[in-house]
Every structure is written in C-alpha cells, then in structure tokens.
Amino acid sequence: MTSQALLGQLGQMILSGGIDVVDCSGVLGPETPLLKLPPELAKDTPPIKIHRISEYDQDGPFWAWNWLELGEHSGTHFDAPHHWITGKDYSDGYTDTLDVQRLIAPVNVLDFSKECAENPDFLLTIDHVKAWEATHGEIKAGEWVVLRSDWDRFADDEAKFLNADATGPHTPGPTAEVIDYLIAKGIVGWGSQCIGTDAGQAGGMNPPFPAHNLLHKNNRFGLASLAKLDKLPAKGAILIAAPLKIKNGTGSPIRALALVPKA
Image (cartoon, rainbow, N blue to C red; front, side, top):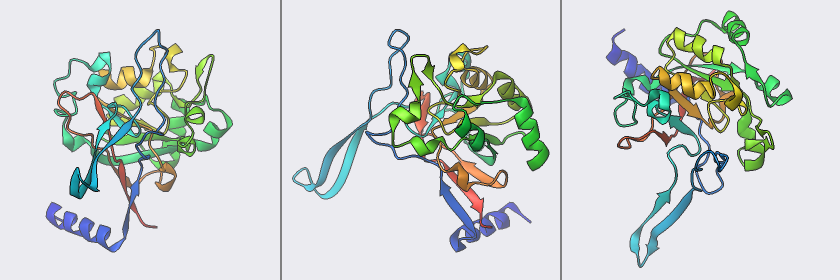
C-alpha cells in the first residue's frame, strides 16, 4: 500500500469513527495546577490569566477574543531540550527549531496506576519496564513512552495534584536507570500525568531530576500533566504532541491528541 493510499484510509477511518481522537490534555485556565518551587531556589511560573479584549461589545461588536498571561510550562505542556541546562546547546532544541517529524509517533502507555494509588512516591524501575515489555511488546526507537498514574484525577485540586509537604512533593515518576534505558532504545520522549516529567522527590536522585537532566541532555522531549491515559491501549495508539512555534521557546502548553483504534 502506498503512503498516499494509507493516509486516505486513515482519513476515512477518522471520519467514520473507526479511529477515536482522545484528548489527553487538561483544561488551561486560572485554576490549572502549576509547579511551586522553593523561593530560595528559583522563580515560579506566574499564575495563568485570561484577559478579555472584546465579546460582541463596544471593543469589538462582531467578535470575541482574549489575550493570555501564562508560562511556557503551564498545564499539559511540552518540554523542549533547551528547557534544561543539559540540553542548552542543541540548535534544534527550541520549539521553533525542533524536527516536527518527531512529534507524531506511536505511544507506549505503561499502566502503573494501581501502584501509584497505593504509593504516591512510586518509582518506575527497569524491572517494571521489562516486565511490561514482556507482556505488551518491545518499546521501539522513535516512540513516545508515558507513565499512566491516573494522577489527572486530582487536576481540579492543586493541593492534591502537587501533593507537597515539608519534605517536598510526593508524586510518582521514573528512576534515572529507566530514563537511561529508554534513551538507549531511542525513544522520542517521555511523558507523565503529574506536574512534571520527574517524580516529586527527584531532586534527591542521582542525577537530580533525571528525566529532565537525561532526556534533554540527549535531545529528547518531555510531556507533563497529560490526561485520560486510561482511554489509551498499552500499545497501538498514535500520540500527537505539538508545541507552539515560539521563537527560542523552551516549551509550550499543548493539546495532546491520541489516535486510538476503536475496539
């Protein structure tokens, strides 16, 4: 089958409902949970604000539109390599210079939601990943890998979503060994349903924040605050995760969409 025929068939399957389009994004607005950093360490992303320009009134009688205040890494978002110091030297590491061919790829959904519900500090290990591969098939080069924790169930409550106490946030994520393992396999990027790509306690790992540190060091991408991963199969879906083309952008809120074959 030619690529033209294949695309035509794909289009027809989407139009007929044979393929579902699943929205893997949270709502972006003033109530969207945002990362909180220790003030002695760094500045926080400012709160999201939506300002009305007009809505069929004297400021614009026939149209409605808004202007926004928000950080690049707000809500469901994309981390480009330049986001982290280890990826700062990649010329194609910005949202306006990256290779868009890499943004649409098969996605491996690692479901450890039960473990995450039992332990908010759950860490995904190589043994977990290899056991998953033994059941579902090998993770391949160029693919996305995402951790299903079902953490999006807390997205309407920032305190629960961040789950922080005096020792810091308590949210699940990967070990450094897992990220190294996936990079060696050639993945395009790693995603999480939590506020960031790392576990809440990742600042104490070696290296600190291994998902950020190692992914971006190797020119790979990160996805955070994903939603509805329970609607995706372990394998067989295609994930579209495209950031805004911001000049020298380090990341961007995204509308993450998955193409899922209807059972």
